[in-house]
Image (cartoon, rainbow, N blue to C red):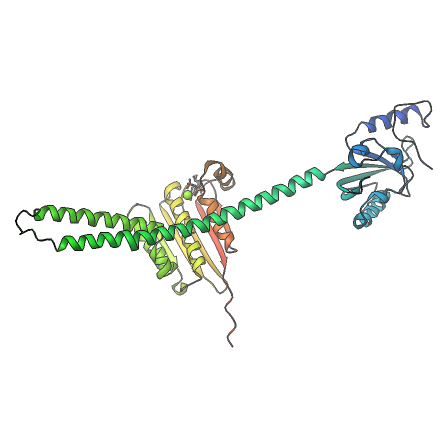
Length: 368
Ligand SMILES: Nc1ncnc2c1ncn2[C@@H]1O[C@H](COP(=O)(O)OP(=O)(O)O)[C@@H](O)[C@H]1O
Ligand SMILES: [Mg+2]
């Protein structure tokens, strides 16, 4: 067997100068596995961290090609790294699967430096760091993130369904019952002896009418009927008309005449995004003008809400939103993602804000 014995405290029985022995001892304290490899790729020294990494005693490995411990599919890259270190003096980091004594693999990151000809080391110094737990944690984090993402999208869909259901119940059940009540009161005959005076009946009627109007407002907020029956253009126009009554800020609207009808879920998503971005502009921006637009092109629908207000730091707001329970901006991203839309929010302090979502449109089937 060629090469040096495993790292160990300086020992008169070990070959090498005291300086080399001290160097090997220092390396033996590294948490990374430190190996000295010959020009041909055989292991000459291996630090004791390899026992923690892979279960081997260092001397089990000595004299064997380092590629013996690399996953077959990663060997070519390992050989390339050896070629690199010989040609360029250093190589890596390279991520490889390292075979353990129990036959399993651990994911490691390897870097190498050429010390061939160096009087003290005379070999290639290889550092091997265990990434398995890190890779597993990253994987778990990605999975958890994907899961959360799916959940929040499902929540949006469920919320829309629930709103639509509530709006229908209010409209078809409670509003109808109140209408019937008013109809009944209309037939009231106050000339009969002992009847309630007309003024009282009229005041009850007015109260019921007022409750009905408020219910209609709530119903509309839950789910504007226009979005289902008349499409995005009318729904946006009606929404803006109502908002104008509540604010001094000028709201301009620009929509292609040929917006037409689009897939239902797309119209709803575009409407909700406009609703949220407009509410944000009116509430947070301190703007004098807000412009809402929806433009249909051959392959895309682009909705935009622009204000000339104070602007804000978008990444910081998104970062905060998760913790503060403010989910308006977040919901814009989620709704867009559900339909393959791309969101861009451009904002600078003092420069106003533009929220734009670009939805791909389904390609119509070719005309036969
Ligand atoms: N057009 C805008 N102009 C200025 N600030 C905005 C605008 N839109 C959003 N913001 C900022 O981003 C934050 C997050 O918005 P959002 O997620 O919709 O939550 P919310 O509207 O409930 O506060 C807002 O609180 C506000 O500080
Ligand atoms: Mg908001």
